[in-house]
Length: 68
View 1: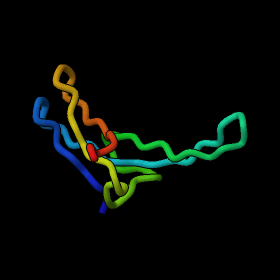
View 2: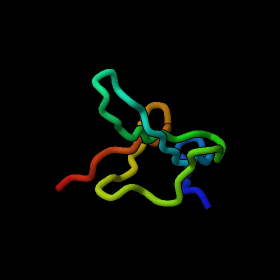
View 3: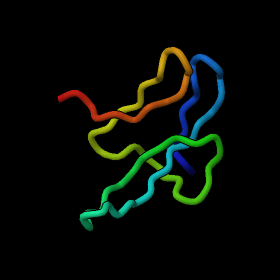
């Protein structure tokens, strides 16, 4: 089951996805994003060291590094 979070503002459910991106220098990074449907790339849990917050004006969920 994909990790999901419900927006406090709109009530809509968003699902966490991840994908690997190769940068111009050859380095590979993992990009995390929320989508309205669970599609390919949906992940089951939050990555270690991250937390979910919500944009107060739009209600969209954001993934950010947890405070130390």
